Image 1 (cartoon, protein in one colour):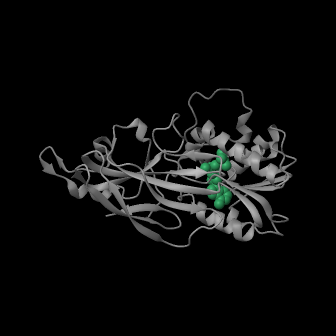
Image 2: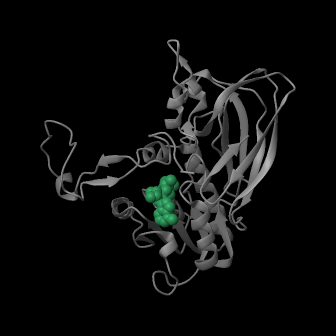
Image 3: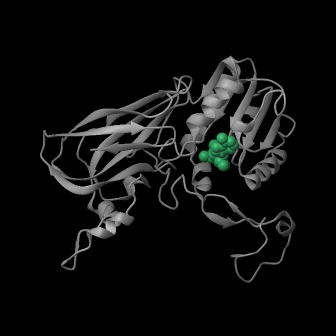
Length: 333
Ligand SMILES: C[S@@+](CC[C@H](N)C(=O)[O-])C[C@H]1O[C@@H](n2cnc3c(N)ncnc32)[C@H](O)[C@@H]1O
């Protein structure tokens, strides 16, 4: 399974031009926006979802609150932030008085930008940015000792595509003290079956102008697509059902699956299974990636399109098997 989502989904890097430091101070306005250069430093994988994510106040204040509580509980202990991005969570940790914050970022140009942001915000004395993957960090070599708190937001629309399980398991085993607090503490995955001709017709074909064009469906995505359901015409056919609960201190290994019954509460055509998650940053603070929130989340719902549209009556049951491995969640009939 790929971790794939749609192009602007929080999982798929897109290439955007990055202005070099040497160009940043230039005053003249280019006649056209920069679109291409052969300089390899000019282009970097920086996904556009970073912007919506950084502007997601609900997400940000959830993390800020949980960090404040944890840093106080740990007597201003040390913090490891996996996946720096702009440096936002590391900055929050420093502002809450963490003794020392170490943060790492796998994409070099993002790590460099975070360093600048951290300097400009006056927290460079307490935050260290390391370029590279968290799973390559070694205590005694890259960092002096194990940490009191781990904070991380490396969760895509489908939860696991940024390899959060692997990074958190590695950190727990190699980088954290035994009684360390992990933010988030746990996550609950929810799903429902939906009718949405609009979504279905964006990804599947059948009869078109009197021709059977179904063989073209072999090019259709079988993994989830990140979609804001609230922006589409759709109807839930079932209530949301709890699918998985994961405790970040005790994550499972390998693949697991179980049967799930969705009881049809509204008759209609099942076009897709939509799933999302509730991220419990601590026991008091939960951030949902679900539909129907007061404010649209920067996370989209993960939507797995059905192979064929099927009609169900009220009271019928749709039984699916829900699967997960280390990098994906998916459903099968
Ligand atoms: C979803 S963004 C979050 C950024 C920032 N923490 C925030 O909350 O605003 C995740 C970032 O983590 C980086 N990343 C993901 N997994 C990583 C890992 N295991 N080690 C280092 N960086 C990672 C990605 O490149 C991306 O920039």
